[in-house]
Image (tube, rainbow, N blue to C red; front, top):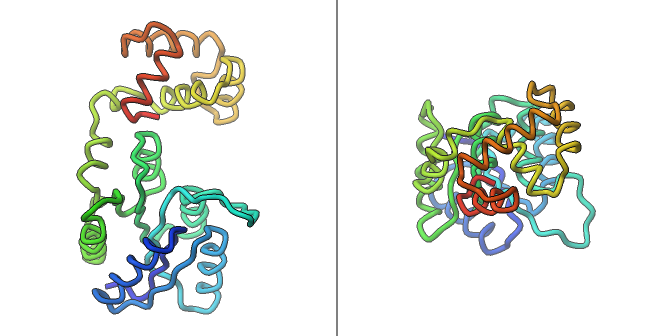
Length: 223
């Protein structure tokens, strides 16, 4: 079982609820913070002191306030942690269930569990902790997260498709997208290739135009 847990959640009521549940159901030392920047400092300090955290539980969305922060959300924190430590266990605890985020966190950043906030989410969180502590090979996923991850419509999309859809939703032109994909060293980066891929996506989703395509992708939770 885990010895030292860090909870990263900006809402006091949720933060307190998680800490209380951990205190009542585990023997771990439990710490918490409302800022990702502070979480990273705590993680670094704990490692330097020879008493590292072995589990991080983090939300993804954090409301901005008066403080200037370098890390804008849980995904930024998780990427930073993974760049420095591949062994620490990470649980995402969030209402965010869009396909791109779910896929990136599970497949690329190798989070150990993804719990969707809801009525029974604390109970599910505790189940995930037990599962992870017993070295479950596959990530623990809430049912709705698994449904998004296994969405057949989403599975037909390649990484380049997902990036193109996301960049289109952000208002980037095909030329801008080409530059972005070249920076990522992706094969599909020429403007003509991107135009062809967008046409293919429109046909796949029966979209009348690019705006309609983005609308459909958002409705499906792909972006």
